[in-house]
Amino acid sequence: MNIFENYLSKVNKIILDNKNILKLENLEQLNNVNLEVPPEHFNFDLSSNIALILAKTNKMNSNNLASNIKDLLLKKVDHFEKIEVAGPGFLNIKLSKEGLVSNINIIFSNKETYGSKKSAETYNIEFVSANPTGPMHVGHCRGAIFGDVLSNLLKFNGNKVVKEYYINDYGNQINSFVESVYLRIREIKFKEKFVLKENLYPGDYIKEIASNIVKDNENIKADNLKDCFEELKRLSLKGSMSLIKDDLKQLGIVHDNFFSETELVKKDLVNKVVKQLQSKNYVEEGFLSPPKGEVLKNWKKIKRLVFKSSEFGDDTDRALQKNDGSWTYFANDIAYHSNKIERKFNNLINILGADHTGYIKRISAAVAALSNKKVKLNCKVCQLVKLYKNGKPFKMSKRSGDFISVQDLLNEVNKDSIRFMMLNRSNDVELDFDFDKVKEKTKDNPVYYVQYAYARINSIFRILNKNLNDKITINSEKFLPNMYEEKILRKIFEWPKIVDSAAYKFEPHKIPFYLYELSTIFHSYWSKGNEDSKFRFIEDGKIKRLESLVFIYLIAIVIKNGMNILGVSLPEKM
Image: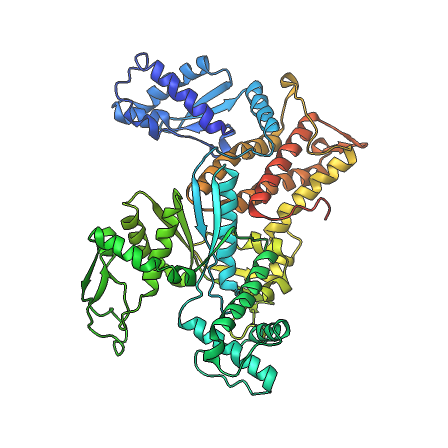
């Protein structure tokens, strides 16, 4: 239920039905009309630019048209009690008591789904996809939470979402990883010293993986890496993915599907998709210019298969083969996205790290070529996270090797704080994560402030022996909200608009922003009650005014729905 959409459709219909009375000849711009939340100082519930839009296209005076539309709407819409023309022709609208109560009752009838917008799209959201060469680090953490919350948000709107992890278990980094595990096994079994060489992984987690392999596989042979490579690769990857899955689980994240790059190669999917693109004349043999600004000592002018990505908006065409004729990482990635398209997803979303910005155009071009531009790939880049403790940059642990792990993060703060705070900025800007701030029990700690609002509401429920499932009836004749309750109600009515915008633009950070603002209004109302008994919720163990209980329920409904989307818990006591 979105009151802005509901009333806008009514307003537009009235305009269409009465275009002759209003002397309107051109209604082509009616779709650009909107209904918004007016600035707070106007003390109205809705605001529309309809007169400004239609006056421009019909060459009329916007104030005169606004006045005529105002008179018409007051006659035709029962819920519109007062309309004021503001500025160059904005219409500020105040709802009647009956209108307010009607909308509140609709919310109470749809508690668990309030804010959602029915949709039936299918989404494949690929996120994390960290190289399985060790545990997750803090750089993965932000994208992991972003992808998970975006998935929850789209599911809340009724979409079918598959959360996918692409396992990069093929290539030189895997060879180095397996060799590192092999040497640690030799260290355990034969007391050989682990000698760190270029490209090997030094972290203590490698010892953990090696130790578990030895413990669970007593007969494993480690005489020669070449002879045991495949078996050791399987066991090493299993151990590494176990660490990653455990990290994700502790963050509240469970993927629906894991897709192996090795399996993709074994099934010869790359060769098949390249032939498919060749048949469309999107791949040809040719020469590429040397990369700009890069060291060219390893670059050779060699004829190779090239994807014509520049035909689909990329800056240049892209090689599908390395100097030795083997497939590039990009070629494998094209095959993977071809598989996604074959699985009939309407929408593909990739959550990328800060170092993958330059990769977006080429993979978007590939998806356009593979799907004949019918499937759109959206790539969302999550920028870096900077950790601070005691006012200083947070240092890494020895276990990780050379990075700050998710475990380091979880050892400092809980899952709820991490999930909420990782969305405390838009994904495209860097994020400062201050451990001291997220442990504070003040307004400066957003997750605490929202959870505390819900806990305070539950304290009222306990006093009154009520719960969120109770049915509330409102007498519209006696419904007289005070100034704080009017603010709360307007914020509550805004919730579906926030959800719609966050889902449409893939911007889940709008959810915690909104919840913090709503909680701030509630805490202000609570504090006012401590100063002035007139604004107190409870007196002698009873609710003073029914309106107060109505607004407490409304806040609880929205906070619960919002925090469920964020995957953050709501303690009833704090």
